[in-house]
Image 1 (cartoon, rainbow, N blue to C red):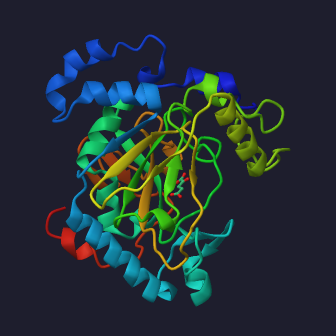
Image 2 (cartoon, rainbow, N blue to C red):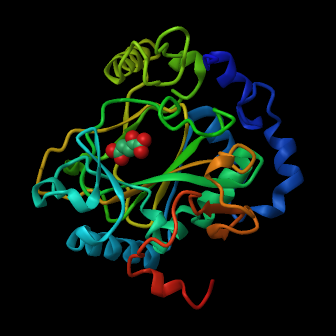
Length: 326
Ligand SMILES: O=C(O)CCC(=O)C(=O)O
């Protein structure tokens, strides 16, 4: 099988990542499509690989997702969802009460059973911004829901989130589901680390830039590589303690981490979506008739598709909020 290497990543970059991207010219052509300062946001993306938006997320949707998560935690034996517990994939129905409390517990793609989550993934400011970043419709590929801090060591996403046909068509949003306390193990990110000359390309073995089942190197070694690159570039982490209603969007090559939890009694409820563009969305994940059919949410220029392999899943309570409008 062909090794996916640094040239593949470079060749798949969206227009905004190219050295000669003409941001002012682009914005002049599309200026009526955004109700915020798009030009500044696109420049910030090129410079920092991360953009922060304040007070842009629908609080009713956040509350609905928080209620869905609380319901799921109470009734986890009745639902079909994969979760990651301390690096291991499990079905949520098999979790013990103790495991449900673990820090770093991730609910994978809750948007398949929570309509509130699916719509949060297409928060207007986030979806519109990413449409301009990709020059194409943003599509949610997967989501992660956290109840407590992840404490995940420094990493980048593309070696792991890599089903998209154009590898560098990758971005993520981080939406707090409550005000985030400094002692709860907030997210931290390294501004400017998305540039390949800063992060360099970690070689998982044989020139591959992706984690594969037969990779000879490990995620810990990736973290060491990135920590070293941050030291060389003198990039310090910025700790993100947003308020409910804020959102952060980051580049698929941006170094980030979950900081240490100082107070284990605190929650850190948060919702992450990883996006690619419509042109790069994995065709095998789409149901027949997509993109015209087979979606859960389609708004603000973006899509959340049903997964081709899932059907008729029991839905969480927020479904009732949408039954009359969709
Ligand atoms: O929220 C966190 O602590 C880390 C999230 C993360 O690293 C990711 O979703 O890629």
